[in-house]
Amino acid sequence: MTTFWMRDEARKTERRAPLTPGDAASLIEKGFDVRVERSKKRVFPDHEYLSAGCVLEKTGGWIDAPASTVVLGLKELPDEPQDLPHRYIHFAHLFKDQTGWQNEIARFERGGGSLFDIEYLVGENNRRVAAFGYWAGWIGAAVGLWRLLERRLGVDGIKAGVAEFASQDKVIQDLRELLAQGQNQVQDELPRAVVIGAKGRSGTGAADCLSAVGIPVTRWDMAETADLDRGALLAHDMLVNCVLVTGPGLLLATSEHLRSPASRLTVLSDVACDPLSNFNPLPVYKAPTSWSQPFDVAGQTASGATVEITAIDNLPSLLPGSASEDFSNQFVASLARFPNGAEWTASLRAFAGACARRAETT
Image 1: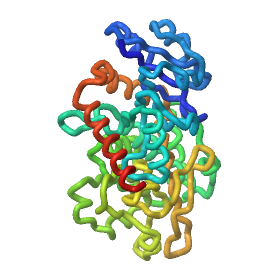
Image 2: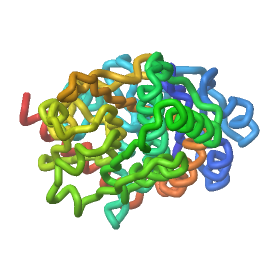
Image 3: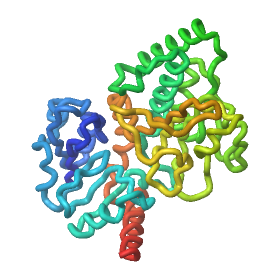
Image 4: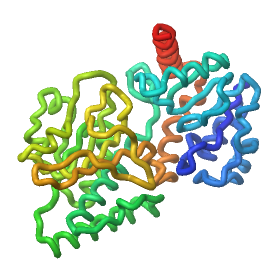
């Protein structure tokens, strides 16, 4: 019998769960053993998992779990223990040679464990079986637009930090009010936004958010970026990047481009958020931003105005309930197939490739 052990996330701002109580119950009905660490921050309370038939475990107990245990999570593992003996399922952000990837891969190798990175769980159609992409795009666009509208009013509210939103409807309401204030006080034309990767999950979410508020959206995807019209791109007030680049080729904007007299860009939202990769299409920042400091300086316009970028790497946690329900609904069928199925083979193959690359560099 396979045991899934859902750990309490190490990151303090991470309230999402990869598995809801209802979907955990469906796995238990299929014969899986589901254990859930107690958590004071997870969006679903412990008692709901207990009622679903899960075994509650102490926070951090995965470290001492039997070696056959499958440790389920979302974000990166804590720095300890140094050796990792289990099978792990989470978003690791290691397989594109991000900064520090070799040291992280070595932890699995020393302990004899393996990593199934959720980003690389793809089916026979090469499409990811589960993703938070829609919500990342939606919230990334919302945070960027919030800042853009505040700047037009000369205020700095969201720049001081973000926190969990009450609901999707409340975000739309607040953004519409900010937009109306700007139209009444500043009498400016409506700001224009361009979404890169508009046909994907994240891009769809970003465009849906902006459209719901009433912002004109330019939707670009592979056809438009294959022969990129940078002048047209720079003519927008905000750029939302939803393209998860896996190789060289796409360059959206540099600091030099932002200084162009033709550029109107003052806010960038990098939903893909991969600054540590050599393939970052927005090489204007060096590290993700955070809930406490959601914006960083990306450059200056020709007139000397600051161009700001937001690149929060756990955006869906700002609406953790909705995001978790959607993700778990996508993911539970694959978990029921573990460790068989094309998605698990694909992810394990990506892990083996990273181990081989690490061996070549040491």
